[in-house]
Image (cartoon, helix red, strand yellow):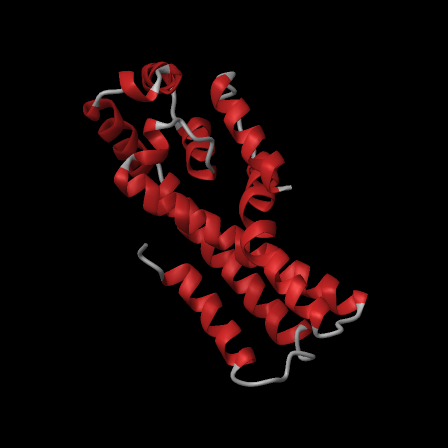
Length: 184
C-alpha cells in the first residue's frame, strides 16, 4: 500500500495530472502515510497482544483517521516551506486551490505546476502559497485535519475501550493531540 500510494503520487506529478479529488488524495494519504505510519504499527502490536479481528478493524479505522490528519499537517508544514509546491505534489491543498482559482490565475498556476522543481522560481512558489492562503486552501486543509482528529478521537473513545493498559492508552491519546498540533 505504501509503495502504491507513493508511486501513484509520483506518477501524477510526472504525467501532469492536475485534477486531484479528495478521494484521490485519500487514496494516496491512506496508502503512503496512514497504513505505513499508524495502522500497521497499531495492528502489529495488537496482533502480538492477541487482538481479535473485530478489534483489529477498529484499530484500522482509528489509524486511518489519525493518518489522514498526520498527512494533512505534513502537507501544511511543507506548504509553509514551499516544498510541496516546488515538487508539484498533488495535495488536498493544491486540489482545493485548483478548484477555486479562475481565469488568468488558473493558467499561471497550471504553467507553474508543469515546471520541474529546478525551473520554478522562488517568486512563483511564493505566488502559489499566497493564492493558497487568499483562496482559503490552507484554511480548508486545517479544518479537514481537525475533522480527522475529531473522528480519530471519537473512534478512540467509542471503539477502543478494549485498550485498557496504562500508560499505553494515555500515550496513544497524547499521540492524537500531537499529530494535529505538531510543528515539525
